[in-house]
Amino acid sequence: MIERIIIAGSGGQGVMLLGKVLAEAAMRLGKFVTWFPAYGPEVRGGTSYCMVTISDSEIGSPYIDKADTVIILNNPSFERFGGRVKDRGLLILNSSLAKAGINKRVDILQFPFSDIAIKLGNIKVANMVALGCYLFKKKAIKIDLMLEVFKFMAPAGKTNILEINEKALRSGEKLANG
Image (cartoon, rainbow, N blue to C red; front, side, top):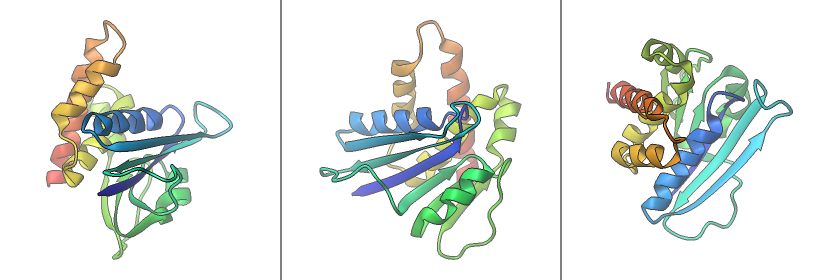
């Protein structure tokens, strides 16, 4: 098994965090993992993306040309990375900030992640709503394991972050479940 994922958005949308928690969870499952971050010229507001590869065997390169899954959080990232999904791959798109047309060669899940995050009380968890969709669709990592990773990575005394992230993951799971 090998899963190649590109995650893209603007700085401040939690692109790198999404990739890191996904990579950490896969490592806890005993998988081989690479996490390859890339930042635009500005940290906040500029384009950022990361590439995560999860595999049962050693990984030759962290670079991904065509991904099994592409998670996009804004329109400039959709324009840049939308075409990087391999045939019969999965595109997860934040429809609050970008829209995809019909594409018969890829499976598209597009939901208003930013709008949902605002309703949950924190726009910064839009990335976790998207992650919930991914986890439900791919079924390789369980949400409970992801919550353990959140606890491990959360700053001391920030238990409110854990609660909102769990709500966001579960919201994404519900969306993907229909």
